[in-house]
Length: 512
Ligand code: HEM
Ligand code: SF4
Image (cartoon, rainbow, N blue to C red; front, side):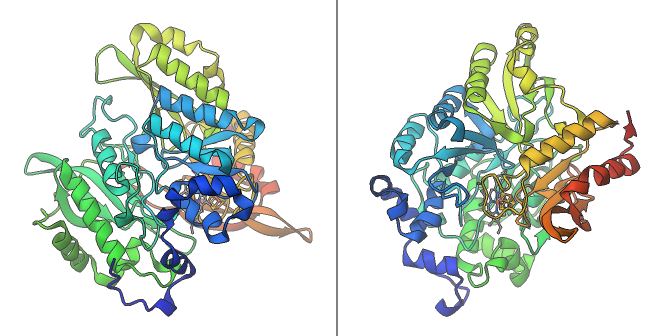
């Protein structure tokens, strides 16, 4: 693999050196051995870094209890797959749980390394993989959560998302062509009008657009967040048909990024930095050469013209007599029993399928009109309600200090407690999207929220305590826009009153 960018070996960052020593993907053939020798005996770089190439995350906060990040293309799981995930976490008792992530994905907790070979066999048996889900790889590929069932859909994204994943991971076997990128990489394919995937924050986003009356995708590139810089994706001036061109163009862009992206400073390794360096026109023409045929120029406008929907509640499908039901999963946290119950509901009332959303919630599709009333009285719908309170409804949170070593604050429990309290105190006319993220890495995307809260440490009364920086102004949907930091260093203890004031002054809330 050539690195045309002339980063001299001496200039390579620490992670490039680790990858140069031994490709991350090679650990896929060493798992039996690791399981036998145990994690304490593993070489540090394998344990802490290379295992992420197969989705296995060593968690320094809970040594010996690993996180397993799956791939869930388009957020779709069969009830069988969900059951297998439930069985995997069930065996870890109180340590086992799962989180729905803001990439429409699922992360399992409490995993023991000695079980990994068996877990991988069981995942394989139901067509699931965690291949290339961490580190310098293409992350879970997101698509419209209501693909194929939404009456106003333009393009069904399901097959395309799966094809792109299969090409990048070699059908889940691992693909050396795309596993040593300069940095992580996000791809999203939107098929509806409401920008359900947050196109703007992906390295490649395909958004529906008509060109000369034909439906295809305009292509956006370079969107990303990092601690030091956040950029929305920009138009690449390209339009593709909704067929294998989507796969080929993704591969072409990835190849250009792999071969030319900077590997010196990891803070400057995401795709946008390469686009900056080349200029978007030069970038496009290099991609076109790699694509191997003429790229059509972009359609004049795209079809994203709706506000974003959250899919919670009961919704008619495009298929007459069928409905999808969006359940609210508080901060995305699931336990084994929840997963068994969800799988059961999908089997009894639906079509043995569940879907995940980037708001960390669940959708059960294909429910007959006649079956709706019974479904709505199921006990699980008390926990995962279809009518959450306005703040809880749109609450999103990253992992935080419970499991993540980067975290500066506890997030999920605190986020939920504050939202519940403010929901109880205030009448809020419309759901307000509050996003929590435990540190500047921004996994919880505070920049897309109405109110974003980023963990930090603050000094109060001579002590260092947990606090947040406040972000506002994020907009999603048709005129998506990134929010910015408006106030720094609010102690978490003071957050209730600060948020209360903001909700009253800026979001029309009234004390009850
Ligand atoms: C240098 C930057 C970053 C680092 C070092 C980093 C690291 C991590 C780690 C260690 C986890 C796993 C924590 C756990 O669940 O145990 C995680 C989760 C995650 N990260 Fe990041 N991350 C970075 C930036 C980002 C950005 C910019 C995004 C996208 C906006 C992102 C998206 C996610 C998602 C979706 C998860 C799953 C948990 C969730 O839904 O919040 N990460 N990240
Ligand atoms: S934002 Fe920070 S604390 Fe939250 S998951 Fe990402 S790295 Fe961990």
